[in-house]
Amino acid sequence: MRRFLIVAASAVALLWTAVPATPQTESQNERFAQTVVRQLLNVQGGKVLVVFGNPEHVTLAEDIATEAFAIGANAVVTLASNRMNKMYYQKVPSRYDSLPPTGGLRVLGIADDIVSIDLPFDPSVVAGVPASRIAAVSKAGNAFTSETLKRSIPTVSIGNGILPSAANARQYGVSERVLSDVFWSGLNTNYSQLSRDVNAVAAAIQGARVRVTARNGTDLSFTAGSSPAETNDGIVSAADRSKGGTAVQKQLPAGDVYFRPQEGTTNGTLVFGDARFNGVVVSGLTLHMSAGRVTSQTVRTGSSEFERMYGAGGAGRDQLAFFDIGSNRSMHVPAAGQWGPGPSMAAGYVTIGIGNDLFLGGSNGSAFAFSSNVPNATVTVNGKTIVSNGTLRL
Image 1: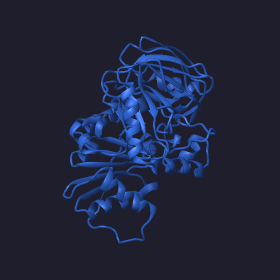
Image 2: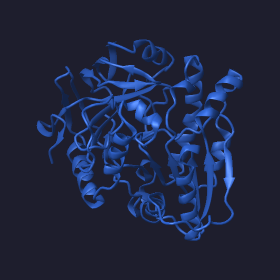
Image 3: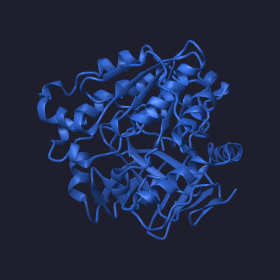
Image 4: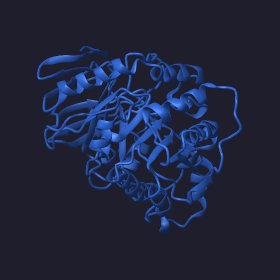
């Protein structure tokens, strides 16, 4: 699933690397860095690659930057951390929350290509912070997402929500080893097969009437937009660069096929799988929808945190933002765990989101965004089954 590219509201620390690092013994990171720079992004000599990194994965950021220098490009590495984000809410007056991320926007001004490495989520960053502050910072960050799409900056985001770390493992209720196995199984896929699969799913969905059902009570129907579905095969191709916009936004592991439904066509009941939202387990979230909007909702557990942020979301918080079908056959997701929207790219995994859809090129800038999976969903497209009980059928 696409993740928001939101720069921390506090100042961005820049590490301008003048020369490549000292040669090292080839590692998994180094091989991966070479693949990202030379194949997936196809960075060209003389261009500027901006790497958005974090202290936990600084070695990977260094390897990617060094690989860019090795082909005659330039690299700028920026670092953001949970500590910096937490200090922002502790020390910065709330009157500055709505200021645009000027520093981040200026960094975008020099970027020809971007690699963004996921920052593991730490729920303590927002614990006790008023929802109005979180919403204001999120709204201000929309400018960064919009500018990235407007300038059509080719971007590869590494992690796609499941980058192995202790924090992310806790988020999904599994061991770090299990999370690592899920991540690398999805990354080490057959990209030619993956490209064929995502395109086949996209072709089936475009403009079709879609129905999603599951044993948990989900029975939701809507009409897919007439525009082609967004496909994430992990590779920024020449054709993608020609299209620009969302076409040059890729995530690793890859495999998502997502689209926005036609406005006003969504009706029925949506029951989400368990997911952690700001560190709180939201279980049994049930939305009743009519003409594309949420008309009522119930939550079995975690209602206080959900309602807190939903209340501050503003206009657009009640709209269905996207529908996502995973197509990565190599990724294997254990049944145990509170996966939520995490491994959305796994074949047959169905993820739905409400609220903000700017990252898909939409116009909903709500400060609220929530997504999770529909466990073991069945999806029919114009009456034909393409996902059966969580299994992709092509």
